[in-house]
Length: 188
Image (tube, rainbow, N blue to C red; front, side):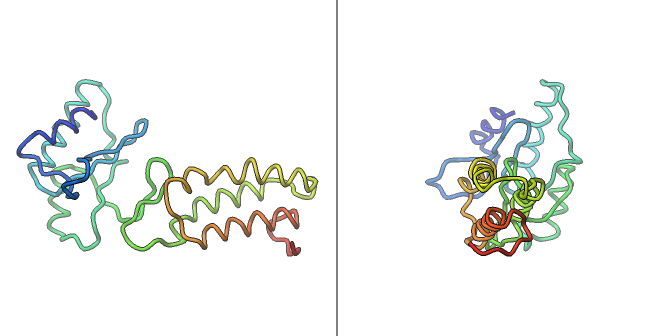
């Protein structure tokens, strides 16, 4: 499938995703069995992509789940363009932001704390599952430094998160460390 999508760049009828001329031509990103395909809304280009996907289904005997698939476009895209893309691809539309294959939020507007609620909730849930009162200060320090701080590492390496998200994570960790619970009010 990846080779078929890459070969579309040599097809003169294919109009790819609009990127600067000096940048590499990218039309898809894949991780394990998840793929993001970038394309223009040109009907011929969409048909060529669908032919590649159909050829992949035939060769691999694996079906692409179109109910789990989605089309994302800028919120100012014309309704006619939305309908055309949905008609050609037979895939439904969804709105930005969405969470990518590796848990990174994908959006095109200003960064908002709401986009990172999933990561903050994961850290919060992990902290709440521990019995802080049963742990020594050293035990809490080890859990925070080895478990909690490693949870958002991938996202923090891949995306430049807002400062208030990092401050929120630090506040949760400090509160757990000094008061042995998330709701505690001890000073540090």
